[in-house]
Image 1 (cartoon, rainbow, N blue to C red):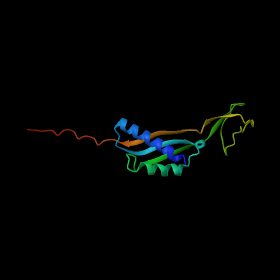
Image 2 (image 1 turned 180 degrees about the vertical axis):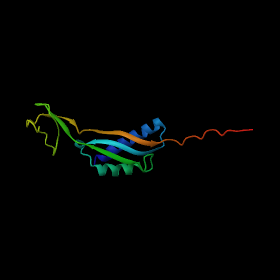
Image 3 (image 1 turned 30 degrees about the horizontal axis):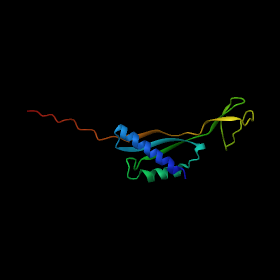
Image 4 (image 1 turned 90 degrees about the horizontal axis):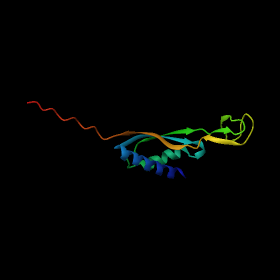
Length: 126
């Protein structure tokens, strides 16, 4: 199950970024995952929930945007969505294609709560 290794890296990055920006809690994490990464979304969410326990990401939502596989035919330059893992150009039938999308695996963004705002000093009138 490589989802565990992915979430370990995800948590490390989130912790580093939270420390850098003074974040005290993460409420949502948005990730892009290409279909060629062979990641099972529900397993990724379950691993994230487990690893987030007791951290600043506890209770955060992991939102996964699955990116479809797209390719470009090297013979006729047609860009197309690869369906059913058939890496064959639908226009000319050539099998020599370049994958141009579907291998993504990154944190697109995260939503965080920072430290509580300090109250302005009270005015004193005499």
